[in-house]
Length: 423
Image (cartoon, rainbow, N blue to C red):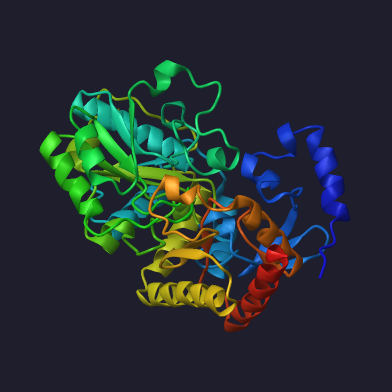
């Protein structure tokens, strides 16, 4: 099979003349898999269509938030009802209050919430609050953990930085990362030592930006105990895992309570949105109640809160997570049935196939994966109508709309791509 790409090629040529690298986010350039970008025209349910008319079974899911598939009817209906009332006010709305109540209902550890316009902004706010609340500067993060394009955390960052081979980005002053302490993911002893005198540890409770890496038994509970002992705050970056691996996210899944939690686009039904929240005694340092300043002109945007509420109400049905678990298991089974030679890391409805013969438990073992092999594999999948993440170091996602037929076709495509990439 082949993919028609004349229209995408034309748009990419035009884009390169007006956008840096022809894209607005580096990994979209698809250079990591050895091809030019595919321009998407529309999406519905489990599928995306490109501008050349090619249809794909989608496992990118807008980088995670399409839990209910693309354009779920409940979200479209809610947005149609909200649009005539206005798109932005820059003032409080009832929907913000209802939205915050819905988040708190799902995640009891969040006693106070602050909305933002992106996950990166949420992380920045959480870090500022942690430093203000503790009176300390150092932040502990994991090597390969990605928490947005934030100067202080672009030290051994995962995701796009790993894909591009620049774990520490030029343009970030040394002073910005001077208070950032790095430890390996799943290395509890290193974290315990680094937390002495630290304001907080920020971690993806399930790493999703070095590919999916699951915490070893006792790791997150150990971090909770270490933070309690040292007086540091525990921050869970649940931009990916929140409302995906459980309604209450990683806190519910692993039974570990964080002091602060960060969310991104998943809480807005895929619209640009973020939020952070946690203990009331910590969050009270934020203005206007406290001296710690954080603000956002479009925070709590009425369209984003409308879409988010529609999704959160659907996710209140526990059967959704039974479906997502089954879908994730089915995708893992598809890899095994196709006999693709990979290590598969999965939790719930997110997984990553690593082209390596060793277990992947941290950044070092993740980056041992054969990225050239992944690139050939991904290109072959696209040629067979399956849309994978355009990088080895990203998660695959399934949603409630992936059908038995979609997964059956995926098995066929995986087998064909495995043969093609081995050739």
